[in-house]
Length: 497
Length: 95
Image (cartoon, rainbow over the protein chains, first blue to last red):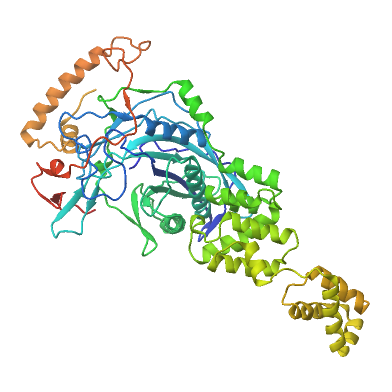
């Protein structure tokens, strides 16, 4: 739902990446309104269930259906979730906020108005730090967060000349999180959404499931020549994935540049993103549909929060992504990149910490990121669905650290643990994968290879890099179980290079 | 502040109230009378007075996050003029 209170000034001073046009370079300016469904059992103003996927109109109370005489009573937990989110966005909490009626007519809005917050939202200004690929970070200003009701759902394809209305979603609590127009590219827009989603999921205030619609974005896009005032913006409604946000911004920026350079003017309007065609198009809504005639809802008193309660919520906040990232870099000595990958999901971070506990943290990070995440991505699995547990992953890391197996063999052990399961130490024991550290055995293997290849020995004496060939042969002869460093040292010693 | 016929027409349309052409001017007169009265009230300086949100000193009641209602789709759609499979049915609306 469009907010009439939209940020018009940006807190960014730097110029973003520029887009080439026929008349010179252009800068794209993006701001976002994200609707995040509050994780709660019941709806914002009624006792009906907020759960997804029930039969039509089963999760509906007479309040949600706007039967005459029904009165809204606010769900305290939803308020708590909004406050928690506000604190997670490092935002000001307004101890007094007001619910307003936003008036419009649509069949999935039975009351003829949505209860929302207009001039006095529960959460004020905050900030989200977004890390970009390449190591740059930007601060994205949060203008506000307010609580409002979701609308119902209309189905248009069930009947030739009727639309069917299901009010199960009607009245479910949403947080609308409005950013300042501080984003400067499709990449930044997608990265912002990703970070915001991570924060909400860390806080446990929204599940961030974009496919089911529990998080969706309205994207405001305008273009300008660098240094000029902000241009007229268009709002692209209900974009429901990071990829689509990026596509929509790119398409819309190019469209606006073409319009302006063709001598035209951008009209402030609402547009739809067609994900199949990858383009935006005008919704052609009637002008007057946007006059919402907000006024304070006479059924609801102002929402007043006690400071002690807000402080209690503040005290219960979990460690947030930025803090976790800093701690991973500080305590585990991880790089910014590795720490950033690990903290992108709370579950991934927890998994890593379980693997790293009491072990070589850098090695643990490498194995979790490269082997495990690589494999999970390939098979489109989430960390929760990993067939290799954190305990098993940790065991593999320990086996490498104490020299029981080489890194190469560890990959085989990982493969077995992935496809067949089992305890890595037992796998190593049972299959005889232990690294050969017995110097006598290694020496015998080295001698054998040297004796069998006198010609190569001569060549290697002239060209020491050929020693690598001998190392390879020894490793092959020992089934990859010889300690590569020991083999390398021995080969060099014996060849005299 | 006063309203003209066009404003009345627009507000009626926004509120989905059918107002025949000949009722527009009388309605504008009625609304202007009310607005004039409000203007008169505005002459009182209330800059140092908190807006009254309730006649008695109470704060907003809150409920716990417990499911206490719903699972009564039959009752919810009972009075709907049209419906199918517990959906409300309305004339087709597609943007």
